[in-house]
Length: 491
Image (cartoon, rainbow, N blue to C red; front, side, top):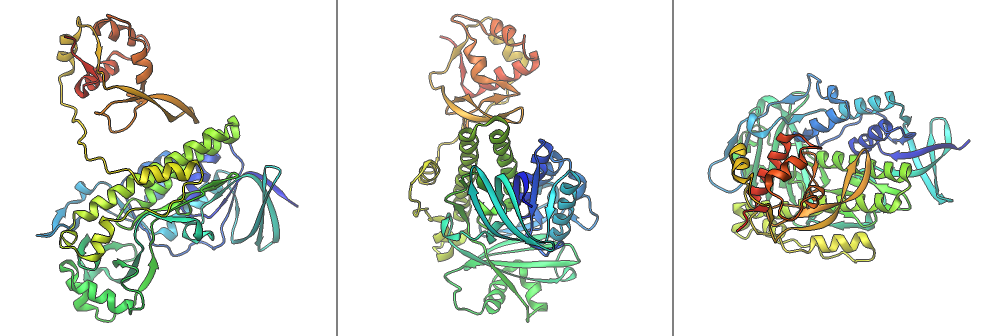
């Protein structure tokens, strides 16, 4: 018999499970299909500090409390030449190194406890879209079944089959790695740039230390990767001790291409996580961004199903995806350019510093906006720094003066999530703001400014605004806007 669910998710990695947990909390009927039995081996154990906030938001923070996980790991970084930079654990933030096999299994159990219908191990065979419903045929231990749903979230990661629809956003790299006993290396993360690429090492659970090298995929094609890996390690000052004690290393490899899917939302078949985009391996925030994006995708799906607003939902989802890809691509190129090897015109580094996305064919709203964002010149203008102003002294100084707005302000329409629903609202634009702003201190800025009347003093405006907000919040907002030059002194 066919089984009906509002949403079916394919893949039980962090991205798929994050979306599942959030959608269950929002009251949706959700099923998940995973082909592999758990626990399964998985790399990507080093989690950036922001991941812990996401687990807390999902009421799953306890899953990171496993005593086997590693915390407070210092780092040595040798990137721009000279002596290595030493970063204490407190400077790096509360990152954590987990066992992904254990964590993914615990996340799945947590989601199942909230009502997730799990089909595992189950192989996805085929799908068909008819009469606004998806029919997914799967095969599990109980035989062949058909699941029907309004929405499908594809969270299969790099395994998703339609690779020809991916747009490369960075040169292809290859990762080569191995493990050595933890006792052979200091208990710290190490990152080092070398001529042919860069090296990364870190303690991981299980009393092991992972050594990893990233090289250009074209440059190592046809070469013995174990030999290449050993040679790269010998060129790093921070990894000499590992090479001296391990001349015969058994390595594993994987491609680590950075891409964005050209059709991430098609007839409510929606890509999330690494099925939608992947980051250059230089980023240490891949899992965090994938989980954060899954939360945004969940909001889009909720808006679609509960409020019947498919255009708003899809436009919000696509805009968030494009922003994440564009921001990361710009950051990555800038960080590669900081390496001393880039200044010496080493091919690996120059290729990444100068990479430009050129294979986008603008054929719909998503690809047109993606093409526009990725081909913008980097904004080198320095954003205005907000001076540290004494709030009460400034408010007393302004109180009897008429309010005057900068002639540089403008407005745009931006997406916001309010009460678990995606909406469009006016946003404030100004050269001092890094991006359009709708809310500040929970206060809707365009609405605040639109309530001003000709000749109104700051004192009268503050009293008006304080009828619906706290006086302290309003004073902080006025001080911030004054410091940026959005409010200016009248002649």
